[in-house]
Each structure stands twice: as structure tokens, then as C-alpha cells.
Image (cartoon, rainbow, N blue to C red; front, side):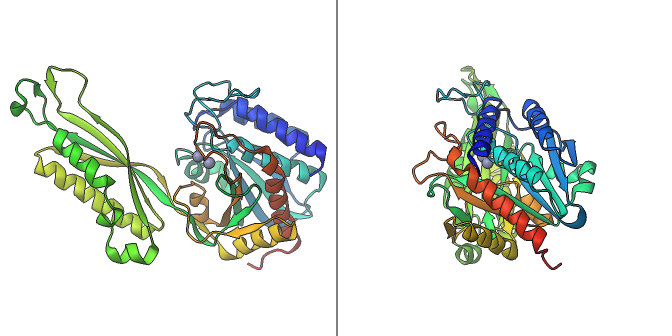
Length: 391
Ligand SMILES: [Zn+2]
Ligand SMILES: [Zn+2]
């Protein structure tokens, strides 16, 4: 990347950082991306994909294989705590996952494609909405507008604090965990706080659920599954609310939420079944009614082995350091929705060994890894367009 191109993507990254918007509300960000990409004269820009999503499409002169590169539009409900000159204009919302950087990388790819037109095939730069809530990828794929954009191969990257800056992190098979949000509502009956025996308070059931769900994950999966996949299941209690702050009333209702994680569909199915059973049994033991529901479902990200090797080849040729990850990451990414349907690969780029972690209030995307992202994506395009993968 020359100095001018690097300067442009850094400026774009900062502008996008200022615009930070929550999942599903990425209107201004999407508008800005739309206007910005017109300078590169793509063959088409499809807007309103699965909400605020947009696809910037470059076509080759001849037909050929189709490559989708995906980034995310959304920021997080985390207040901007650092006083940057490009601080978020929405003080309660900020880019603490680096999606501003991922978008800037795709813009760098768009510029490359405008200067180096495709000989054949097609490249789709997808700016996906609502990744953080696990809804965006699914909505994009289910959108009728996506019918004409279905790719042969899909790629995405995520910056990863905790790894040396610019290091490329790859793994075939499961790369990131599946997760789902579980909500348990317990219904009893309120009574006067002076006569709790006349009501049915869910207090004891709730405290039991918090303890049990926080306990060893082996409790929820069979030992067989657990030992064959390592620490394959994880349950994190994330929220609990009991009654109201009304000192004259014994509570009659509580709402409890936990995130369930696993590295495979089968372990996730066991986890869901066991946690549901446990919630129902606990409710029954305390004579309460129970509603169990699930939300924000992320399938595991499953990397195609051939495409993972392709990322490795491209990174090695460009002299980037590559590290093969041994175990999947315990976080989730809704790019798994794409890898369920298309051959795909998600890879990581180190953000710095001591960089604040993702979703940490002091996190900010490290601009010096922008060229690595652009370099690998453009390398992937060159490789597949010049040497189509045998179908
Ligand atoms: Zn995130
Ligand atoms: Zn992210």
C-alpha cells in the first residue's frame, strides 16, 4: 500500500469511528460507505441488504468465480471513554470491536479493484449490519436482494488483541464458538412483604439457577463430549432481575439470562437441552411457572481447509507472520452463518500482544494493521481470479 492509499484508509477509519451506531441502526455509516465508494466506480452498489447492509460489486470482463469479502457496520453500547480527536459523536456508542477498521480495509480493497480491474469473476464487498447481535448475517442471506449476490467463496477477518501486531492467525475447521442467549422467566405470585408465606417468590429458585448455571460446564454436557473436545462448553450468567424495588412487596417474577457456548452444533444441542431441563426442574421444585426462550444465536464459524491454506499461502508470499491456532476461540461471530452455506474462511490479524481486548472501553482499532488486511484480501482475490479453484 502506498502512503497516499494508507492515509486515505486511516482517514476513513477515523470518520467511521466518529459515526459509531448500534446494531440495526447503522443508517449514517451505511450512507457514508455508499457515498464514499462511488469514487471507485464499482459495477453496482446494492443497498438495504438485511436492513442497513450494502454490497459494493466489481465484475470482471469475463465470467468466473465469485468472492465475497465481508465486514461489519455496527458499533457497541459502550461509552466512548478515551478523548480522541475522532471520538464517537454518539457518547454512549463506540467502535470497541474494530469494525471501523474492518470497513476501512474493504474500502482499501475497493480502491485496489478500481485501479486493477478484474479480468474475470466477481468480487462482492459486503458491509453487513447487526453483527454484534447475531442477526445481521442471517438477515442478509435471507434477503431476496442477496439471491443475485450468492458467492462461491466467502472470507472475513477480525482484528485480535493478545497477538503480535500484524500476525495472521489461521485455523481450519471450527475457528470460533457457537453461542446462544438463554432467557428464563419464573412466574410465582406476589404477596405482602410482611406475609411472604402467602405468595410464591422465585428468589430461592433464581439463586439456585445462578449458582448451578455458573458451576462447571461438565454438569451440562456428557463427560464423553467434554473430554473429546476439550473445554467444549461454557455457560456465563449475564443478567438477573427479581421483583421490583418495592419494600412492601414480596416478588412474584424474575428474569434470568445466560450465554451458552460450544464448539459444535451437537454439543450446543446437548447444552440447550440440559439447561432447559434444569430450569424446568428448578421451577417445578419451587412451584413456579417457567418460560424458556432463546435469542441472538450464532452458529460456530467453520473454516474450509483449502481456503485456510489459501490464506496461509497469500500471507506467506507477502511475508506476513502466520500462526496456526490450535483451539477454536471462545467468542462467537455471525460469519458462521456464511460458512454454514458457502465455503469460507475467517482469519485473525493480531492487534498487539498488550492491546486492550475487544469490547474493552480502552480498545481502539490499531491503524498500522490496515495494510495487512488489504494485502491479504487483495492477495486472495488475485490468487482465485488467476488460478480458479477447481469446482
Ligand atoms: Zn464484537
Ligand atoms: Zn467484532
